[in-house]
Length: 419
Image (cartoon, rainbow, N blue to C red; front, side):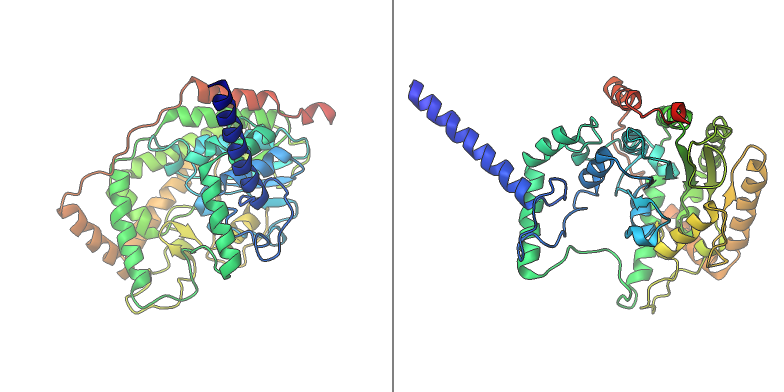
């Protein structure tokens, strides 16, 4: 019996070691540094299979990064991915399906490296809702505890990694690529259908939306500590296409949105006068920009039913194109955008009221346009059917969540002391 138990344990250990070794060798998330095998693993097709959490968390934990661009899939798709196309020193560290809890963890983790000079972070109402806290692979990644070695061990033993590894091998053997949601051309009507379905779906989402002030308080803790240690933090409110913004207003969330802008403005203003140690954007340690609110580039007519060429500014109502993100970075850097339709406001307590009134005016003007009339009719029909709200079980922050952020903030490199 003793020999049987020992044999079983040895077999189990060998199986786990083989499983972990296979995952580490294939390295689908590009975190172990294993050598590429021509024809098998040389093409990293699955780095962002999990929304990017494992890969991004490993990058941030390793350090050596000057500046990071954080945000949800709007950042992933709305800004260039190649660092050569971004301002010097920046990497796109966006993660699909993320929220302010994960983004706060990412910013705190990145600041543990004394090389980090600035954080540019995309924000919007969605990321502060109670509907989400973290995706499954967050718990595998270095975002969880800030320890890259522990994260690599967790990832190596994960079935999710094994699945991604098998897909990566298949991609390399067959020459295939992961399916991407965007294209340069579409079948006639496909884009229009995406806009219409998007407006219907997001109306139901906003019916069930609930803002969580604890998430804003958590983010403020990170903003406070980073700026106190000399890291420059520039926030910006993501643009949305007018169709999505109108659905938000019609769902009764317009006041929530304006209150959110005001809360963010007050939050950033509390730290605006802090001096960054080595700024990479003009201005102080904390600043906030707003690119939302029915702006000209976001109010370009939705694709017609006959359109086949991709929309010039938005993939669909929730996601803008990389040239828009590039122009937004230019504006935040004190430069002129290449597309004059791309505009943004610096939000401060002094500009808040005026910019809020401008949003209401732009919305009114857009609603009077043929495109505005089209989405108004569409939403009228949706509302007439009394759709149910899209409800998810609320996920509130707990003591462990607070502790994980506190632990990362305690390890931030004290740049300000070395000026």
